[in-house]
Length: 440
Image (tube, rainbow, N blue to C red):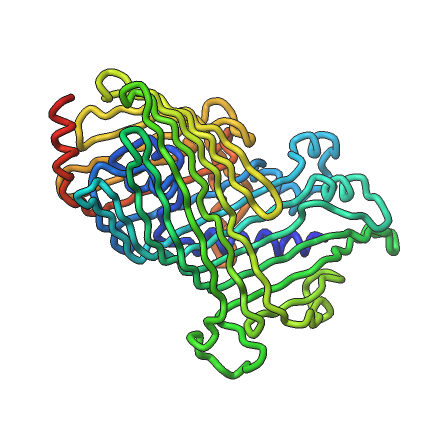
């Protein structure tokens, strides 16, 4: 059984270490008007300026997201049997989940038209990796039960795809803004490993657990009908579409703003010619795990998000407080977080925020912070959603395959960690924005 967990964690670690330039969703940026990062959370949230985003410079992020301490994975991999079962299981949620979402910017731009319509377009490379292990798997291992057991929410899924988009945000009357973003998707790689059952027994005095399930993989590097064909262009056989929808309502003379959005609502159909698959019937380390599943095409949905925000402004819009509910729908789990923030806009080119994210295992004492400097020509952004005051070595060695034994340093109170840094280029503010600022 340990071998399958090693495989799960190794694949998850590779996804983390391969992450490049990114502009994924940063919850602390939701109420920061100058940031174009927040359009990823809600396409109806119009920045104060247009922008031009370029590769590498316009966004870099890294992070681990989950609801369980990384130290527990160390115990599962190294010395689980020596742990007291009741103490160990008491620290686990019903579904232990870790995920990584990275969006590499190829290019992007946003601009206003004369009728106050805000347009955006661009292209990204996206990677979405999610690992889920249900509590009942740990219970079977801890109690050393024998028999055939059905397990819930045990699996690993990974999506990598190209995303070309065009979006628009426009006013309906004086108080309502609507936003929409349409996406064309090209599938690059997909991996899915699901465990449905565990067969546990004692053989020669040793406790053995055999996973039973399925795995499948689809990639532009695979073509089971023409193995010698190395042309990835001929293997572009997976396509899909998606949409982001958002709205913002202004009340009480624009002092109160209520907004909501659904993002990444879509699917990718993966072609049959680049599909490999099989059954997991043993230890997932040999040819005996491979079986022909018919190589049929299949569809996967994107991991969509639901964001609902409320902001109250005071002191002539220089200060505000906000509350954001962020729910993410994974294949094997649903995650909900609530972020409270205090936001300040001392000038029309500087915004900063302090936040705290609750629920989903987040503890008190972990806060977020972001700053956005956006004068006439340049837009500099830096932010984190999870900042812990105390850190410790986890005992995990992510660079061990490179003959390096440096341990991972993770916050002691936070179960997630991220960092966002980006430099973009601004376009001039529209005339109606400049006139509105003069009346403040």
